[in-house]
Amino acid sequence: MSDAPTRTIDLGTAIETQTDGWYSNLILTLCCAAMAIEGYDAQVVAYAAPAIIRDWQIDKAYFGPVFSAALFGYMIGATFLSGVSDRIGRQRTLVIGNIVFGLLTVASAFATTIPALLVLRFTAGLGLGCSIPSVMALGVEYAPQRRRAFRVSVLFVG
Image (cartoon, rainbow, N blue to C red; front, side, top):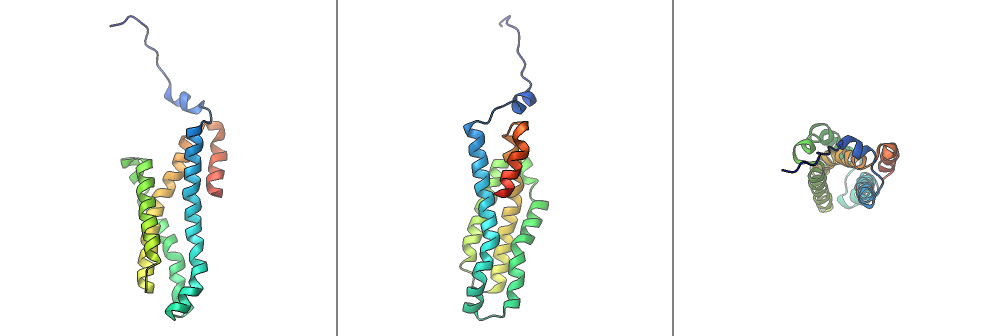
């Protein structure tokens, strides 16, 4: 055994005083991309709706629930599934949630009925709901304290 004095490091202080490095900025960029894709998905159905209504020859009133299905799934996912990140990790939750969201969003393009589209949009919203809280947490965790408010603002703009 060495007689050298043991040096302790206060992890909290080390995190709070870190600088904005390339890794921190990469995390912010990737988290912003996830938020932008989520925002795009929430809006794209409004642009696709008229063509779908015309092709399926349905009344536009039937399409109303489709607009809210993903948001409802997002609400349920964020409420009940965001705690998954505490058990398996934020990165894994983010990746799994985005894979579920992405696959089901692509599958939505192949739906042929309103009930199928509702189920796909709702389930995609669940995946998104469990991953977006992880995006916010990751974006803040990798930022020094003086930059956290700015990072949260950037993530919400994304």
